[in-house]
Length: 436
Image 1 (cartoon, rainbow, N blue to C red):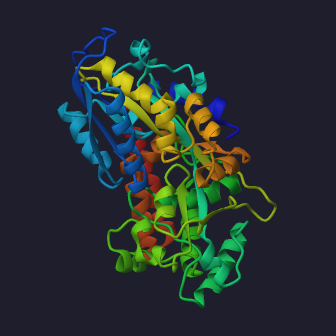
Image 2: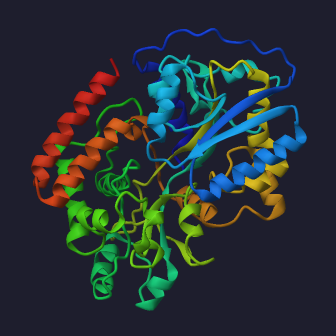
Image 3: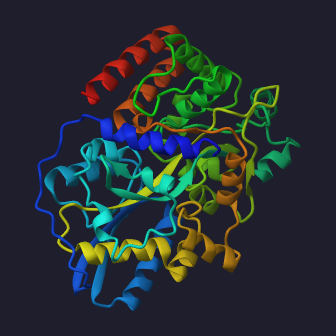
């Protein structure tokens, strides 16, 4: 995470330059400094581990603040962006929301889509956050959201599956490709990548090309940094993984899993898929479906010279308050509780990654809870020359371009050159459109 200080400030500027159509002005309820009896809605996405911990945290809040009821709204990631977008467009969004990094572009391009949290400083204590971490949530000078944790994707493996064939976790891209032969004889795979809404398959190909070229796929201000040839080579790399039995084809994945997320796949739960690429902040859902201690973190893949640059980090998620809320003080108090309360921190643990809040982090260190796969992933990323992900890379429409290209290459309906030309053109056109 060595680049994060410089890149965070650059991101703040980039978001303020986004020229998407502004939302209609809303009447903002000013804070009055008191906590009154009311009901708040709080929404988030995640796996069962995050859901269970958050519900327990809400129970703790209810004991401490019996007059302020928090009604939970939660689910899985697929379709969640579309649901919240519809709520935001209709002015029916929850009072407090867990939001994704790119939502600041689409839902608050002028900084007016969410409540300005600077106005709630009397209730929301942000002294445990450094300026650069807070800058991720600033749009046009307004603090629209607070970073909950910083995270990147890491590689995690089923230790039992690897032990059963005497294989070591790969350290280089060459090691990974060679593993296809070892697992192929067992009708299994050393890892797998999905092409659902998370864009995981394209992510790994991007890391490979970024490491090789030193170019960033999408810059922080929304410019395509890859050439058309870079995109073709990334698709070639993805196809190489399929052809060498490192990952399943899209057809095999669809036939065996249907629409199920990879952590719900019988192939993963049964050990036939022995590895995943996942956010350190969200790996708990994979860990939970395997016997305790079976899932382990592996090294970030490097080239044959040991260069492991090109891996990426971002705010894994942020908390925002609705600009429509009628209870800004109470909403701020609940966000403060989620971010800073010691007992709450122990309940939530690392289900949203390693806390960015120094107060929450200190609580976990004190209780000995700052351990596990999320921490191991963070430690490895902190030692690498990482790149801060552009929020434009995470946009839902952009992910549809990645997945369409990978799908066409996997099914053989297009060669990598044709798919790269289409993706290059589609990305450039969309980025130009969204920044107007």
